[in-house]
Amino acid sequence: MRKSAKGRNNFIMAGYKMGRTTEDIKREMTAILREMKDPRVRDSMISVVRVEVTNDLSYCSVYVSSMYGMEKSKEAVKALKNAAGFVRKELGSRLRLRHTPAPLFYATDSIEYSAGINKILNELDIPEEEEEEENEEDI
Image 1 (cartoon, rainbow, N blue to C red):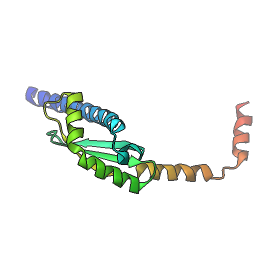
Image 2: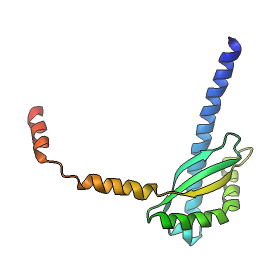
Image 3: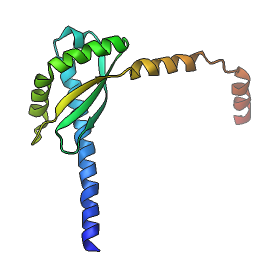
Image 4: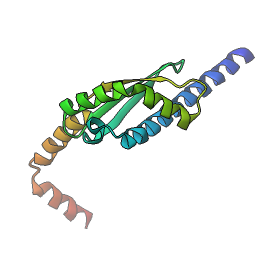
């Protein structure tokens, strides 16, 4: 019974550490991308949407999105793939991990998609009667 409880605690701690490491990589990756001088990255206003790290920390998938749409995201990903060695070196020096994961960059249109949803929600015509009735009930 003791062995299984101990193993379970190690699993929970490993999951916690992996989640923390993933968030650290995302934070530092965002900072590195802001400091890059390549105009395809700098002028695209890209954002790191999500980071996924393999269990052995050999690779990390970095999903980036641009405010200007999918085409700009794809251009930025091409630039980031060319600069993957530089990004990995910077990531390693900032995080001090035993093994720095190799970044794999992917373009996504999540910012554009969420902006479209926001636009649709703002265009909804909500009658004002409901709001007035709620205010009268509160008094």
